[in-house]
Length: 231
Image 1: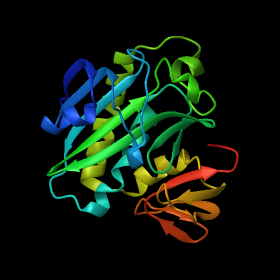
Image 2: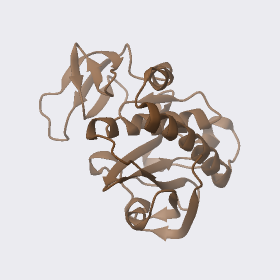
Image 3: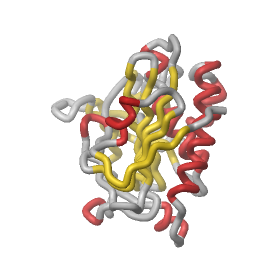
């Protein structure tokens, strides 16, 4: 298991930026981020002191870019397995509860390391996003400990990461992810960039062995997937 070393700030621009100075096993957290972000440079907003904002640094050794591309899914599975709720994984990097977002993952490679950025709504979420976001407190009906959730996720992440590092995106990991696949069987529209004027549409057939999303017989390696009526 990884021996994590926690570095905490009350306020940070971004824990992923903090993690640029870290080494494998370092974890950077903050009570508040002034410029937190998710995939495609989307802003990640969080209420101060209420949620988990965390970036963990892990070593990659000689992992190929193709293998690294599956790590956000593995990290998402680690988060979902650590929580006390029946959550789902929304390709490529989100944890959802029913039709609302609960957590997001942003992985960034830096040399021989990867920074795994995690944002999780523990006790709050922005009011402006109430129609498409939720929190553990809202789901479970009582306030949750950010530190306890952090430690549970780090223990799960260590286990999943070690399995992935040794065996890759193997059948066992894919089965865990398939069990929680939010998009499988649904008709989806996938924009590969924010400016994509012709999204790929079709029935989602699940996640392939290389981490791509299967939609209408096509493999999609990056993008934002939407279900009609769920944004």
